[in-house]
Structures are given as structure tokens and as C-alpha cells.
Length: 367
Image (cartoon, rainbow, N blue to C red; front, side, top):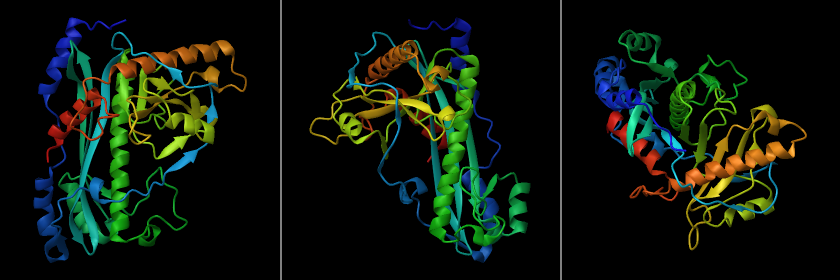
């Protein structure tokens, strides 16, 4: 069934893009004007304009991981839905650059943003208010307390590269000591990139929680949803994972996944280190992979499983209902293959709705 949006809701959505963003944090040029007199001769200004997202090498290693099967049997063919089920798309972007070095340690300026674009009368309109944050990431020890406080007094949000993240296992040494984390400049760059990614994910979770609090229509989230504790089985959201550094399943299951034909999905399975926090997932072949990489056109869908699937003995009726749910979402995802998001190199797995959100956000954060 196609959702009907009330006229007042449509008008509010159409006004949203022109409302503007209340950005209290200074821009890169404003931040640099504050930094220049502080750093003086101690700063080495970098001439490299490359973002850390492009220059920092990823440390993830491809692997195959175990999971708990929910469904048995062969891959299941799915026909595209007749009408759109997805009402909106959520995505976030980030951009971080080393702007200078102070006593050999990098100063990283980062911008992160996230937004939801809702489909109204075949148009994508910004839903609610986009999220945008700017931040300067520095080693507090290397930068010095005086300059650190000057930045805070000037309204510049700063993050300490010497402090561990909440999602990272703490060092055996005190985190307040410089030795608690490696001081190698490239290690600090990698830590800055991790902090920026965590901030982007936080903004995305905030927007998704707002959607679930006020909407019953389906939201497509770019990426996984395993870390979002705000969702329950009734949340009208699902995640679509486009990259596959980790493949889930046994040897035979992975072979079946890599040979999925177009328009077919794998049996569903549970992913998670703790049963009660697991997500249900399955693979879906979005576009044919013939004469191409076996991961071409392959996506993985994540949803919050109903509590009945987390019991030791799953009732056949509950599993059948969930299988129908997976088929319904897969059919809706297949319908979003057109229009194609070319010339983006990820077009084989990138929905046009997500591509449109990225384009909108890049226009917000600027070059």
C-alpha cells in the first residue's frame, strides 16, 4: 500500500530545505584564523589537500565469520515490488583534513553531516532538520592547556586525540598519560578518522531515532544498524550494507552467497556477539554479477529480529512470518534499482535515494 502524506506534512517537508542550519561551530577558515596566532613558528602548515578518508589506509582484513542460521534451504527468488514501500533514505558524510602539525602531531579539522530525504510526490524532500557538526581534533598534551582553553573560549569544538574512544578497549596504562596511545603522527591520523566516523554514526543514530519516534513509514538506512540500541523489532527501518569486508556463513553458505543470481536472496541468519543484541540479516543480489567480481551488485540487509526468533526453540509460525517479512523488504529494495546512480563508481549497490542524500549533504558541507 502506498502511504498518503497529509497536506500539512508535505508543506512542512517542502519548507525544511530553506530553513537553514544553525551552525554555531566555526568554519575551517574561521578556525584557521584563530589557530594561526596561537601556533606561530611551532606550526607546519600542510600543503596536502587530500582528506583522511582517502589517504589513511584501512586496517580491516577480509574474513569469513560465523553466524547463526535462521532459515534453511537454497537461495530464494524475489520479484520486485509493484509499488514503493520505502518512504525515505538516511545517510551521513564526513570530511577530515590535516590542516597543520604542532610539535610533530597533526591538527585535523573535520566536518560531519547526516540527513533524511523523504519521497513526496516522486520528489526527495529533506525531512526535519539535517545534522551538521564541525570539530578540531588535536593532541591535548602536544597542543598545551593554554591554547586548548583559547579554542574552547572561542567556541571551537575540540576533541582530544590522546583520549580513547568509548568503543575502543582501554590501554593498560592511564589514558591521561601521553604514552597511553601511540604518538606516531600516522597513528594519530588513524585515531582522528575513527573519532570522526563515530561522530557521523552518532548523528545518523539521532536522526533515525527521531524518525522512529514520529513515523510509521519505512526508512532505508545506508549501512548496518547493529550498533543502534534505539531500535526494536517494530521500528520501521532497515539497513543496507554495500561493502563486504566480512562475509557471514559457513563455507557452503558463502559459496551460495557469491553465486546468488540477480533478484535472489540468501536464507536469513543472526549476526551478533550476544544473542539479545543480534540483528537478522540476509544477502540480496541487486544486479547480475556475470563477468564481474562476485561481490558486484551484492548487498546485505539488516533488520531488528522479533523476540520470538531469539528463543532457543523458534516456532515454525514465527519463522514463516519473518520469512515473509524478509521477502517483502527484499522486493521493496529490488524496486529501488532504478534510476541508476551513475556516474558514481558504487552504482551497482548504491540506491539513487542514498546517492541523492549524499549529494545534498556534500553541498551543505562544501569543498
